[in-house]
Amino acid sequence: MYRSPILLLIFAGFFTSSCSENKIPAQATVEQRLPAFTEITGLSSLGTFKHDNGATSNKWFPETMSGGGGFSDFDSDGDLDIVLVKGSKISQDPGASLGGIEVFENDGTGKFKRAKPLGLSDLPGYGMGIYSADLDNDGDQDLIYTTLGPNAILFNEHGKFVQHKDVAPGLDNNDWSTAVLVFDADNDGWNDILMGNYVDWTPQTDIYCSSDGSRKGYCTPELYTGIPGVLYHNLGNGTFSNQTIGSGFEKMTGKTLGIAATDFNLDGLIDVIVANDTDPDQLFVNRGNGVFEESGIVSGLAFDERGRARAGMGVDVGFADQTEMATVVVGNFSDEMMGVYRHLGNGAFLDRAAVSGIGHESVLNLAFGVLLTDLNLDGSLDLFVANGHVEESVERVRDNVTYLQPPHVFLGDDLGHFVDVADRLNPELGKYAGRGLALGDVTGDAIPDVLLIENGGPVHLWKNDSDGHFLRVTLEGVTSNRDGLGTRLELFSSGKKQIQILKSGSSYLSTSEFAATFGLGDLSVADSLKLYWPSGKVQVVFSPKSGSLHLTEAN
Image 1 (spheres, rainbow, N blue to C red):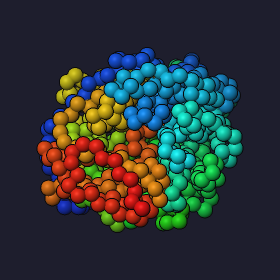
Image 2 (tube, rainbow, N blue to C red):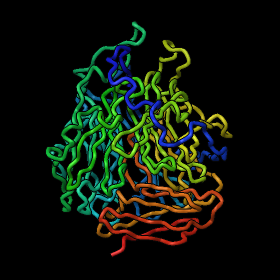
Image 3 (cartoon, rainbow, N blue to C red):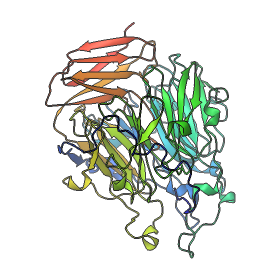
Image 4 (tube, one colour):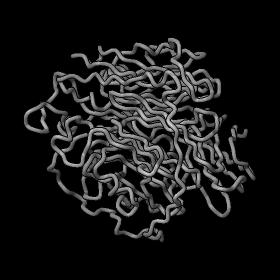
């Protein structure tokens, strides 16, 4: 969100791009194989959806922030359905607001119809995000709904969602909750929930702010106190306990808008990256047995290239080059660069925003949803970014900054360099008040498609028509959690190694499919695929062919 123009500059130049580039040349060599997209929103009732941000002349702070959604196979028929936060108006008592979730059922070809009532249409609170995962290891997808108001864990019972009482302590309070990461924090085979919270705000404590000196506008989060996050431990019986204290997440101090998971040091334990809005971003290193150590400042992830805490919204992490080191991408406010950090192999991260080609291209935009994925199936991770400003009147007070903004489509190479090709796509994607962003194969061709949700506007679904061979891997855990979250996959082909971590979280208020898609370019067969399950089990598949592959954890 907004930031004040006066901030203390600390740690200036900390781990800047002037440091060693890990033997990576500075010259970009991005292959210009453009991805191809076709918008298919209007082919079904999905085109009738419009998010309600509840905006009024009051200019309530939360109005600009909502717009979550994503993919979930709610009816377990093998194709991905779409779940969207409806939105609502903010009442004087935010907990009394009535919103909910809309579900659009996929016919298997990428055409959708509104699903019949599923227990989701009327839920209390001002809706923010929606997250899908198997929380009870029964093979179907449950939902987690975050709000300004009471949150909800909704268990899937044969395609209908049921909210049980007393599922988790404090879940139904009136905190402003946002991002969720579902992961097995202690490797006991059950998915736990890390819930991020934003700021302490109510209509009664709203602060008057103005960007032009004459009209009320939306305030910066710097004026409000952050609300700490919560770690809910899955007890395996349909309930959760609060395990924040003693886990290390008591240092997750709030203003959180994005959470991502990875194993950045490849020790077999899932680490957590937290994007905070105008507060330092955080890195929680997994020390085992459900204990995490916060090291955001020490690692170099906490601040931007100028030593400031950026207005971090969305976040994602992946292995974007042949160093085999994780790269973290963090969204930005206008006048900031997006954060681009590569792990150096010693617990520290290098700020590569400028040298990556992403930083300068992102300065005028405001990034929410961010996702690293191989859009053009060439074997290198690319970056899709949902942009959109928070203030409709920004064009009256700023040159070259607009409210509606086009997405970024950055193509990457194996060297950690990116080129924005959004303006070269035919047809162009358009301009939006972008918020949520998710990936999922809705047409059955095994290539992940792109869903973008606007704040106070429609959704957009683009079919990925990119040409190339690929391997799409889905998992089923047995000793590990049923979703296989936290599994590290290593694909070897023609002397090249690709690494992915099957993960939830990432982006902004949204849920993507649980699948790992590896681009193979012109190859129809890879050499081998190696899996490291959270349980410690290792599996190897030799000569996997292009297409889809479903693997069950070996006994």
